[in-house]
Amino acid sequence: SHGCGVEQTILSAGPVLEAFGNAKTAHNNNSSRFGKFIQVNYRENGMVQGAVVQKYLLEKSRIVSQGQYERNYHVFYYLLSGATDLEREQLHLLPSDKYKYLNAKNLTLENCDERYEFSRLKQSMEMVGFSPEKQRRLFNVLSAVLLIGNVEFFPKKSTYHHDESVQVRNQDVVNIISELLKVKQDTLLAAMTSKRVKASGETLIMQYKLPEAIAARDALAKCLYGALFDWIVLQVNHALLNKDQTLHTGNSI
Image 1 (cartoon, one colour):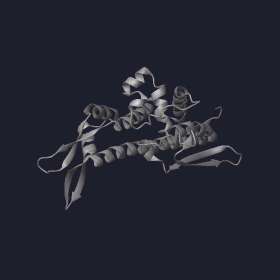
Image 2 (cartoon, rainbow, N blue to C red):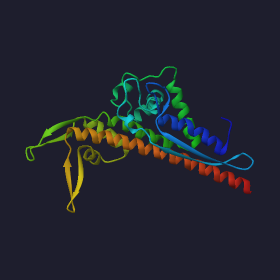
Image 3 (cartoon, rainbow, N blue to C red):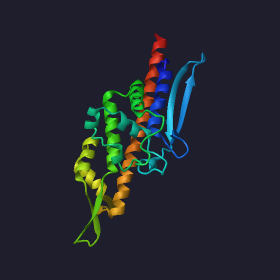
Image 4 (cartoon, rainbow, N blue to C red):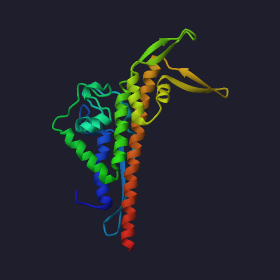
């Protein structure tokens, strides 16, 4: 906690990556569900010169379902426990037991103050270079991922094609998700209920059936979280690069 420069950035990146990449499993309350490789370069005098973080094999399936004694990634519970009243309103947060992507049987973790962990996470993110605006956008995506799991569909009989397409049952949830992600409602609805297929040079729009719509919904949540995790690693490496450049500039003066 008393380091500076590259060393401090590496130390601060740890809690951030753990919050987004670790989860409770049946055998471990803080199991890493992704691979991480940190390459650290040292000077001849033993000081850290620079570092690069690489991640691989993030367990995206955990986003949409967990085992009986398991939980989703820590950051969701930190956010729901530690968010202020204003943040809860801005992010449209619900009680943790209202989300279908969170295992209702394991919403709490013994010997863990998740309100404190959320405060610690935000402090670590700030030290790694996440501005308040970047943090807000990041939490927007987290809230949207949780709400995507609450989107429900119902089959609608088509009198023309004689097959079942689907409609969203709770349009209000989709409206909130579109607001959080800053995308058009129609675009989001289309992505959840249909797909585009190219054939013979033409683009066809095919409506999902109910199982396909559910699979597409879950795939969207996993894709969003995966992209968010990649962006976090990119931000960490950007901060490490800036600290390395600062160190070189300081030495040359």
